[in-house]
Length: 370
Image (cartoon, rainbow, N blue to C red):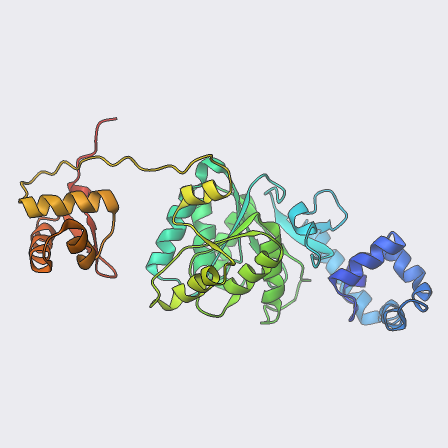
């Protein structure tokens, strides 16, 4: 109770609060011996003295104690063994965390996935595939329970049997946004919810940068899937970079609004590019080498012309390509390339994807025998 009260005193932040508790060996001792602060920091001495006599502060702290007991919330203090060790290495880590759930916040592998609230279908798809590819490694997936990429990351983790923790910018008495309530309830059984805020704390704008530092601190690495030039995902990435955490981004086209932030992080040399889970596992040294897909000659159920066959082999080997790239790499004129692609589309051999990129339609490819 004394630790919770000390942290609520105006002028006593996370850094000062932890230093005081270390110096006086307990929060209770800080209140009992606050006069000793007079010769060190008179302003701090006045703040603690004011807090000691602030009836509203103690009433709020007592109410929070009752809330904690009623809903069986764990309070992780920064000196406790079960306090997240990755976070404790960060100078401005919270004095305590309120935690509800069953995931181990000190598990071997913890990855944060963040991004824009206005996620595109591309961003959502990349997030799903990335997390699905991490199933064998069983990392804890951390995000902020917001709309867009955050929600997609939590949902993909749940769908793939991975624990996932949501870091909140408000108290544990509510879920914001409200549409994520059902998902949050599932996370209590397959992950957890974390916050440093008292109950009855509204999801005010100024709370989310504080929330973002916890996301960054809890993780081994942060992945930004999509982000505009400004926003919470970039704040999280910058904080993670300042903590000497690994920061990765999924690259995008330079003309896409929600790729600008990711591309900017790469330009600033604050992040490395990853395309998929294999890239991440290689960069994190979870695997010694990248897993490269074996290129298998496609077997199609329809006859192809020489031009069409050349294009199909090229797409199968290299993946998504634009018409200009296909023309250049195949050596075919653009008009012949366009005509061949049109026929291949009609026969459902290739498909045109968003961004006018062409790829093989897998429904027409016969899988090789195992």
